[in-house]
Each structure stands twice: as C-alpha cells, then as structure tokens.
Image (cartoon, rainbow, N blue to C red; front, top):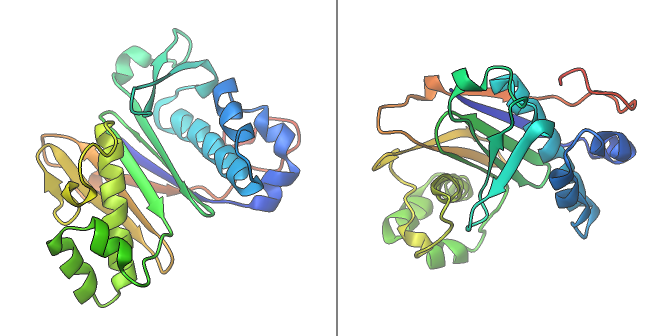
Length: 234
C-alpha cells in the first residue's frame, strides 16, 4: 500500500471554519496550528492535519483521534495504534505516514513501509542554491534542462523526500543526498507531479521493485463546509 493525497488550500474556507475544523483534530495537531506565528502557517498546519486524518481513514481505516503519536530524535512523526485506533490493525501491519506543505499545496503519504514526501514551490532564479547544495552532476542537470526551475524543484523535492523517508534528517552534505537516479540502495525515488509552479516527489524504502503504477495519487477537493460536524469525507 502506497497512497498519496494532495490538496490545494482554500484559505477562505479554512479561516472562516477555523474553530469547527480545529475540533476535528487531536491536541498535538491543534498545537502545531496555534504555535504558528502567521495566519498562512496556521492554515497550512490545519489543512495538513485535516488531510492526514482523512488519508489515514481512507487508506488504512485508522482514526487519527485515537492514535498515539511519537516523534523520533530527528523530528519525524509516527504513531502507535491504540486498541481502538483501527478496526483491523492486526491485518494492516505497519502503517507509515509523512506530510509536506508549501504555499497553498499540502501532501500526505500513507504506506506500509517507511515513506517520505515533499511538495515545493521553491525557485532558484539565479541558481545560487543549485551551486551551493547540488552535486556537479545535479548542477549540470539543472543548467542544461529545458526548464531549469522545473528541474531544480524536481531534484530538491526528491532530496527532501529522501531524508524524510530515512527519518534521520540532513546528517551530511545536501549534495550527497540522492536525487538523479530512481533508486538508491533500498530507496525508490518518484516524482509524481511537476506543474508550472510546484513539484511533488515521493521516496519509499523497499528492497523489491516498486513501479509508479503501484502508487495511487488522489486529489482531495476539500473538506466540506464547516458546519460544526464531521466533514462528509471523514
């Protein structure tokens, strides 16, 4: 099971329904929302929490409200299921998740193996970031691409997704993090979306072959009107 969920924020809806939507999240996700200084950050965290709750229920039948969340020493979240968190947790085995957001774009990955995801609107118009953080081969790939900014984002999201999948953070030079090849050891790298302003990449740890056809990508249009009740998608 490898499922990816993608959502473009409706800031007006999230802002007007703030209290009702916040009530749909567990305390640890509420805290991640309220500690953000600016409204965009608070809305990003709210949208990410809602998308995570929907994705876990849709992909694995897991209720985020009943799941005990753990954070490793490098900041990667995971969870331990309570007895009531999933209707058939014993049959589901390991369930991993990862979250990413950039600007209005939110992405969540759910898998039965370690997974990392990254969505990015980042640009590098003068290629200073490329020159500083990319390997010579990666720099060459960006500079010779028909669309350098598109290639820059593709490689950047693959690097970010890779370190999020390993759960160790950036422990070495950024240039040493793989991005050009589709496989690095037991890790498989995929770029799932490349649009004009953003890229979305996924990395999974899996010794056997994984094809892009094995990954489902679902666009979530919204969470329903905030009316003090559970959105219909949940």
